[in-house]
Length: 79
Image (cartoon, rainbow, N blue to C red; front, top):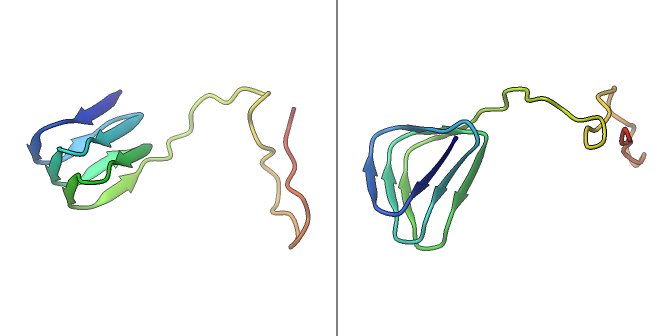
């Protein structure tokens, strides 16, 4: 589900939830994940694909999926 890199990785990484590269970490490869965090001092060379696969939404946190609001109009939230 999550990948945390403290050392060196040569190759592609895929994580369903999050990939995190720590300050002393190094990744040379492509990343596919829903969320990414790269600390200052970390090394990364490759591409990042953000996977936005639909997950179960709870009614209390899900934003309304309606047509976009007009410019300057407030966003709506389903509660």
